[in-house]
Structures are given as C-alpha cells and as structure tokens.
View 1 (spheres, rainbow, N blue to C red):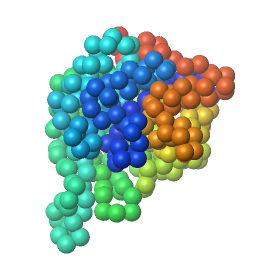
View 2: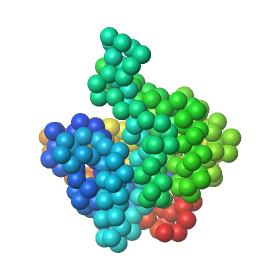
View 3: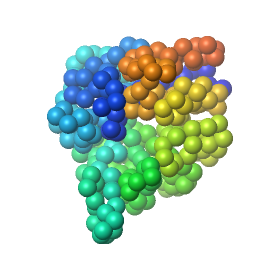
View 4: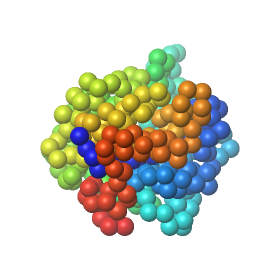
Length: 294
C-alpha cells in the first residue's frame, strides 16, 4: 500500500460534459480557477485540457492553453502542471466512405499535438499510448505506434516528463517497449485509465494486472470514471499507486449532487487519510516523480 499519495486533478477534459454540469470549467479563467481550487484542496498535480469558450467543446488551441497556464502561474500557487497532449486524435468513421474522416473528426500529426507543450514547457504532459475505440458508435482515438514514438522522443527533447496514459494491456506493452528503447527516462510515470468504453474496466483485477505489468520502479496513478472514481482512489492506494480525480472523469460528489473539482479532491483526500495515508504536496511530489525543482 502507498501511504504517501499524490493527487492529480483533471479539471475539465474534452468530453461532452458542459451541458450536464454548470460546474465544468470552460474559459481559460474558469479552468485556471479550477486548477487553483484543486491545488488548495490538496492536489499536487493538475491535468489540463482547454475548451472553446464559445461552444464549450474541447480545443487544442495553443493560445487558450497559454492563457490558462499563465493565469495559474501568475497566481503563484505551487502545483505541477500536466497539459494534455491527447487532442487531435479523434477519428469518426464515415459509413458511406470509410476511407475518410466523418463529421466531428479531428486528426493531426504527432508533432502538431505538442505545439502548446513546446510553447509552454510544463513539468508534465500526457502521452496516450495507443489507439482505442470510444463507445458504441464510430469514434476511435488514433495514435499509432510510430506516432507514439515520435511524440515520446520530442517530449524527451523538450525536457518534459511524459505521463503515459494506458487504457488496456496492449498499450502498457507498447509503453514498456518504448521505455526499453530509451525513449522514456527514469523513473517512468504512468496513468492507468479505467472504465472508458472500450478500454479496461474500472475494477480491481484490471488495475492490478496493468500495474503489475509496468516497469520496475515506475511511478503510477490510477482512476476510474463516473461512480467508480472514488472506489478506484482506494484501490490505487492499496495497490501502491497514486490517484486521480476531477470533473474530466466524474461530475458527481454523490448521487444527484454535482461536484466541483475542489470537492472531489477533498473527498479523495479524506479517503486517503481514513486509510492511514497522507496527501503529498507539490514539492514532495516533484521529488517522488523525478521532476526538476520548479
């Protein structure tokens, strides 16, 4: 069991959640405020997407990332910034012509997905390690192995720590191969992402199996979506990992009660403390994760 636990808060995501909760931050100011709120509640790391302020839909606009990041940095709160690099992989198959992207697709190459990371140089950025079906429709997230390697190499050149997001065992296998090839520096950092259709389920066996397949000495965190968010907080801690919560993954504090990011962090912290652990601050988290001092 891990008793010194890092909490990551994923404050907004890119999914269609804005219409379901007025707590989901949309503008750069709202996203920055959510990250600051999460940090004050106990999150050492904030995982940040941005959204189009007009539509609320997920965006990869570097200017929006820059505005949100600058607002957080200007506040002076001590928190590790983890910027998504996952946007630009959405492929919706066109049934009439499967060779072309359908409506809602957004596909760009691996280096274009890193433009905002290159500009802002956060301590961490995510690296989705593979391709996966999303739901029962035609949506697929596309990131082939060659693109994963290109992104990992460029992230290393930038001096940013990749948080390798893995959604099933095949993605763990690819990530381990990249680690063996020297594309990922020690200590590697993984995020075990559970419950997303159709990746691994948010259950004990899936988390344990994936964690057991990570490289020796890897740092890792895990999460489950929706109602499995808090059970997976306890499970990740028991299995020796760190935890992630936030409105990207779950909108509710309890049944029928919409949450803020700060409330979800506070609830996770309470679980950690009730299980005999303690919540680690940003400075100690940097030491654990092998990050350079801010």
